[in-house]
Structure formats: C-alpha cells, structure tokens
Picture 1: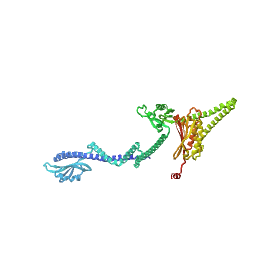
Picture 2: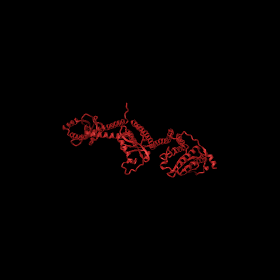
Picture 3: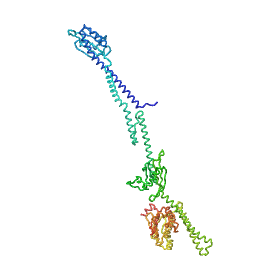
Picture 4: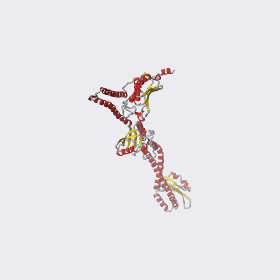
Length: 587
C-alpha cells in the first residue's frame, strides 16, 4: 500500500484540529449567547408582570388577581407569597428554592430584587417585590419566577457562535502552523532555493535529506540529480576541452557556422592561413575571419543545397584544399556547416617534384642513349670506313656509357643514403692531407678550364675532426666539380674556419651564381640552374652531398649572388673530449 504523503497527513490533522476547536468553542458560545439572551428577555418580562401582580394583590377581593395568576402559571411562571406566617406557592407547584428563600427577609423589609435562579431544574428570571395593604402597610412579599424563553435573537446568537468558533479556530491554527506546517513548508522553501540555484548553474548546491517523508526523499532525489548533472557537466567539459585541444592541435584550419551563417568556431591553424581583417566597413562580418567572399558563397551554397563541396584555392604562397560539409540535427535539418582547410602545398610540390624527377631521369637516360644510337647505327651499316673515325666513335660511345654508369651509380647511392641502409663509420682524422690531395688533383682540371684553384687556409693548423675521410673527400670532390663546371673565368677557393665544436669547410667560386628563387631547391634531385639541362652534370651531386651530411649529423648551406659566384659551406664536428681530458688540456 502506498504510503500517505506527510504533507497531506499534516494538512488533514491541522484541518481536523482547527475544525474541532472551532466547533468546541463556537457551539458553547452559541448556546451561551442564546441562554443569556433568553435570560435577559425573561428578566425584562418578569419585573413588569411582578409589578402587575403586586398591584392586583393589593385589592384582595378582586378576582383579577386570581385570573392573572392563572395566566401567569399557564405561561410557565411560578409565584410565591411570603409573609410572617410562612411561604406559599400561589402559581405553580414548585417549592421556593433555597437561594430565593434566603432573600425573603429583604423583601419583607421592603426591598425589591431582580435576578436569576434555578427553579424546578430550569433557569428562571425572578422578581421579588414587597406587597402593601390598603392602609399602606407592608403585609407580605411576592416572588415571581419566569423561565427563560428559547429562540430569542437566533441570528445574533448564530453570528456570535460562528465568530467565536472562527476566533478559536484561528488562534488554534496559528499555534498549530508552527508545530505542524512550518516544519514541512520550510524544507519545501529550501528545496525551491536549491532547485533555483541548480538551474542557475550552481551544481554544488545540496538539499537537506533529513526531512520526514517525501520531503526528504525529494531532497535526496534533487541531490542525486545535482550530482548526476555535475558528473555529466564535468564529462561534457572534459570532452569539450579534449575536442578543443584536438581541433586546436590540427594542422588543418577549421571554421564552423550555424544555420544563420554566423561563425561559431575557428582554430589557430585557420588564423595562420588567413590574415584577419578589421571589422570596420566590412559588408559581411565573416570577412573578418576569412577575407575571401567566394569562400563564404561556397558555405551559403552548401547550406542551401545540403551537398558537400570540395575545391582547391591559392592563398598567398599556399595551395589549400577546401572541403565544406553540412551539419544536420537528429531530424535531418541542416543546422550549420563545417569547413576544413588543408594545406596541400607540400603535397603539390612533391607531386610536381615527382613529375619533374621522372622527366629528368628520362631526359638524363635518353641523352646518352640517343648519342650512342646515333653512333652505333653508322658503324653497323658500314658507313664509317676510316679507322680513325671508328676509334673516335668508339671513344664517344665509351664516354656516354661511362656517363650513363655514373648516373645510375649516383642514383643507387642516393637511394641507399635516403633509405638509411648505407653505414658510415666515423673516426678521428686530420684534414690537411685530405684537402691538399684533392686540391692537387683538381688544380690541373681547373687550369684546363682557365681557372685558378686556391687554398686560403693553412690546414696544418686545422684541428682534428670526427668524421669519415672518404665521405669528406667525396663532399669536396662534388663541390669542387660543380664550382669548376659553373665558373667560366676567375678562381675557385677552398678555406676553413673552426671553433671549439666544429670545423666549417667552404668552397667559393666566381661563376654564374644562383638566383634567389633557386636557392631553396639546389639540393633537390636533378635540380639544375640551367633549366635546359644542357649536360653539365646529372643534377644529383648536391643531393648526394646533402644526404651524406644528414647521415653524418652535419649541415650544408649555400650563399650566392647571381652573376658573382657562390659559396657552399658544410660542417665537420670535432671529437668530443672527456671532462678529465678537457681539464688536463686547460691546465
């Protein structure tokens, strides 16, 4: 059986008690008022009738006195005559009550009296008057008693009873409110305050659970709701922050709009892609975020059509891939759109490099093969009859084969370097013998090209380095070979500087130089300043040099000015000294 509500129980008890008090007070008040009004009416009637009887009693021989007594008796009244000889009832049969008997002496002394007394079990109004004879002497006393008549002023009595009941009920209710209702109403008010606080976002608010009945149960339920909301809010905030950090950490730019087209979310990557504009005099506030009208037109079209959209766009020096997707709610209605901006600049550059690489490889392979075919076909057809011409043809074919072999070997070595399969052993070494030996070998080649090869540093003073001698020599050969090939007049010089950590080797020339726009790409495969690939090298030397130095944890860089020459520099680290050895050296 379902337990009755405490609030209803207390309300029933309160109502019952108030009603009982009102009835218990109102009904006696009504009866008392009726009694008092009836007694008053009886008193008002008793004295005139008593005076009339006294006047008639003076004339004893008159029959009027006897008739008046009979009428008085018929109306329910009782009368007694008191004299020195005794008391006798002259109307009615009830004996004189003792309360009135004690007053007869006063009546015989000539005093009048008016009051109420119990006669025959009834409340009666009495009047006690002296009686004089014809000579004017006091002969006796007359006592008349008239019962109180019911029904006097009934409406006024009812009003008095109701007012008395209401007053008593109000006083009882005021006393009971503090005992019965306030202990229930106050917790409800506190529950209301807690509910309002929770609705305002204060999830730490708690209600009392100690109240009896459903009030305590409601407080417990409200606290459970608050705790559940707090946990849910914490989870939502955690997920929101996690999602925000994820979105902020993306390299792709993200912008989201609502169904009104207003921007709701962006991330830092988007700010790096676009330069924000000031909001002054902008026809579309969204232009402050992305200053490109066509992009926002794409967003509007996606919102209208509900179909995703993707396209590429150029922003400054970047190529961006824009993908706009509509967002829908659980009913399938479009409530916004999200745009993703992906920087595909490097991807496009890699794709372009791949295409150029294939084209360059094809060109580099086709050139020697075409030359050899042009020489082999005349030899096969017997068109070359002179032995000297045949030997010249054979020399050209051999050079082209060697060129093709070098190209393939360079490709293989570069692939091994980039794949990490080529092991490089490093050890302590000096640079003086290595540098002088390479320069001696290339001095004659420089002279053949009308150039002067100079060594500007006394390498005997150069400190020891920790490197692979073969690879350092290969680096110098690559740089000297390029310097001589691309220098038509002037000189090529080799120098070095050093500090406590590393030695920097430099190869400078006075050749054609490199344009500023070409400098970032000089270490790419098959990249040549000569766009026509006229045949000065395979375009792999600097790529091999760069990969070699990366494998050795060294650096290479170039500085150049178009028409004035270039300088290539690379580092070779010195051996790391143990702390004890370094202290000994300092000592």
